[in-house]
Structure formats: structure tokens, C-alpha cells
Image (cartoon, rainbow, N blue to C red; front, side):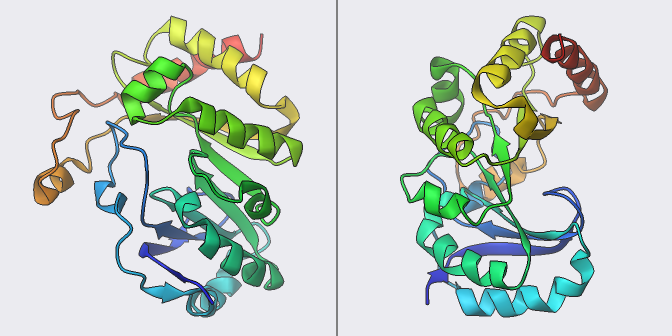
Length: 240
């Protein structure tokens, strides 16, 4: 029985997948996204819950999920604790639960085995070029591409998310390229939703508390109304 390093559990989430869900925030991430609002989850932390303990906790909330809800594994990067996922996800499946994985696809683990138990991938695109992806996250976009290829081979369903950072993503050239990127990398019939998330600074104080330099301390927040306008413009390119 595996144990996990869990930062927190949100019991009644309505934004991390369909229906009412329990979102499990797993510690550890290899990326260092400049707009990250959870830097406290970068390190692994204490292994504080077993798979059986988590299943028992989830079972308590099961009546609230209805026919659409379930459990979402987020982070951090949940794939960084892949062995734990492979231990707990079959147990949750035996409970008849819908399982979602909120990920950037950046981890060297048994991805195919994990995705066999995954009903929905909530995929963080981050960026679409190798150079900008590295500049924004410190990671290699080719790891992301490898994950997408495995998911497509298994015919998995996606919610796609793109954080819109001012001066980087808030322009027509990026929106056109993003539309082409999504068309090239994801079967359209497997995309259930595409979301734009406006960059915000809600986690800025955490950098000070943790004594971590905040690379975007001077970056203005993305105006939500402008973000909605950008999304409508993006849809014109995507649907053309």
C-alpha cells in the first residue's frame, strides 16, 4: 500500500472537471512556471496519507458526486507521484468513480498505465513553442508531446487549459498559432472543452513567505474581460 504527499483536498470542487468533485492536490513538480500560484507544492513534502486512507475519505463524499462528479488528481504535478496513482486509482475505480487527471504531462512514469484508469485529462498547455515553453516553465515541451501521443493512442478525452499571460499570449499571432497547435495535436472529437485562464497574482504572497524569488512580481494581471475577448477571437481561428 503506497503513501502520498498530499498538500490538500478540496471536497466540493466544481471547476476541476464535470460535476461536484474532490480534488486531490499532490505535492511535487519538476516545472517552475513563472506564473505558478502554488510554489509550496514544488517539493515532495511529508508522505502523509495512504491509498486506503484516501479511498476511505473519498467514500465519505461519494453521495455528493451524483452521476457526473468524481475525483480529480491535481498538484503540483500528479504524475510525479505516479506509483501512488497506480495504487489508488484502481481502488477508486472499484468504487465506480469518474477520475480526472489535471496535468502538464511532464513526468517520466508509467503514463499509459495511469491513463488506463483516467476518464478525463485536464491538460495544461503552458505554451506551444519549445523556446517559450522552456522560458516560461523550465521544462521540455517534448515531454508534453510524448504524453499527448500516449493519450491520443488510448483515445482519451481532454479539457484543454491555457493560462493567458499579458505581453506573451494576449495577441492575435499567438491565438492563431494556438488554434493550429491544438488542431495538430489533439483529435477534435476528443476535446470536450477549451478554457482560457487569466493570469492572476493570488499566490504572490507565498513567494515572500517561502523566500522564493517571484519572476513575475511586476507582471500585471490579465484582465478577465479582455481574456474573454481573446477567447472569442481564438474560437474564430479554431473553428475556421
